[in-house]
Length: 298
Length: 273
Image (cartoon, rainbow over all chains, first blue to last red; front, side, top):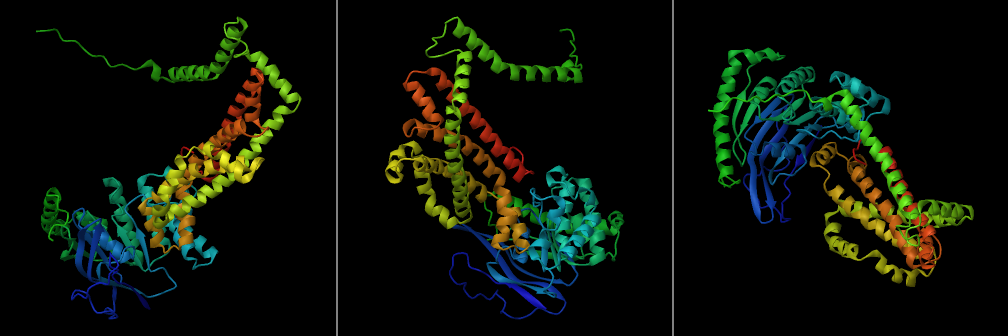
């Protein structure tokens, strides 16, 4: 087992000032913790103004846990996902991700939309991660691609260009592409946000079934409380910018669960409880945005 | 109080299959008959001597001049001379232009360093540097080819930079999230993402290459279609001049379409190449 650490890289090239919020380096997280986010903040500097977008965030995600983050638009939840994915460094703090089997891909990501390459046919898109990593012999890669095309119902479209597919099918390609590398951690950034309500419901149910077979560690960003409850073990609420994780809700439904839990009173109660918290944050974000003050709270 | 009037919304006959078919036939008929109408009118006006035949010889006289030029081999020689220079200049210009475009498009540092210089050079009329090229490269094909290379480079570089710089962020992030190397990012993301725009640029550059080749032949040299046109004018033979003009137009259209077809082969997913 090894771990990947994303330490801060200062925006302007000067060494970071020692800060009490920064956890001491080289302390491994507890056993059973897959992703450990410690004191992470993120700022964006554009010209001469610095916007404090995120944090400080402290978050431990356990092995095999499905964690969702809901929050108002612009609260920085996608930024957190990008930091965890290693796409952007944190401004302060660090993220430690345990990599248990280094012969496998540590992470794969399903972005919101328009991430499927229009220049590759569906099958070529799905095998992208496998071809890039070159860990498996070619025959095994072919097998993997066939398997995941089949599991997402994409086999008939294997030789089609994505431009001929509907939005829902394209998003299935993005999911198949991420799952084909069979990553230890799956990061999903509002993967169903661009779909219509019915397709969305359908794909949520498909994802629920897929996940319950493999039980990978998942960090899931969404706007939809319903989606978050249905899929997750834990739902976190992100505050208005700069985003902090203000509340955590454990989802009490047993696994494997069924999409029918949506109709239960317990589901509605939890939905209401989360919405009460979220509503305040959405209003705060709205007020801050109208005041032309995107760095609210600073 | 006024009386009530009613608005009737009824089927539109032009929306029927027969109506659309009729419209299609009319469009095609107009499209393909127009050149003949123009030629016919030209012929009639020239025969009636409304047009001065020493400036506007009739199409039939131009046609017989074309036959003569084909038979004595002068037309083929001119097409070959212009065509070969154009091809060489276009090829090297495209290669160099794409390479520079990739370099500047992927490196912000190179871009901010060279962009102003690039635009400054782009603004200089390429024909204005022909005398300088003649000084450097002497007479012969080289200065003319270099001129075409220069023209093509700019036409390819600028769109390539723009296309490289505007590769959508989700594509780049997908590449990075799979841990692509720089080379893999280029191969799987940047190159295919920019190919459609690069081919649009190449199509424009193909036509412009012929334009520059012909213009250079006006000024310099004694071969090629440009020379044929210019020399005919100088000795006051309008028929071969028109033959040269028409052949240039046909070659220009053909070359542009060949590059377009090549683009559709290389980038079959792209629309509008």
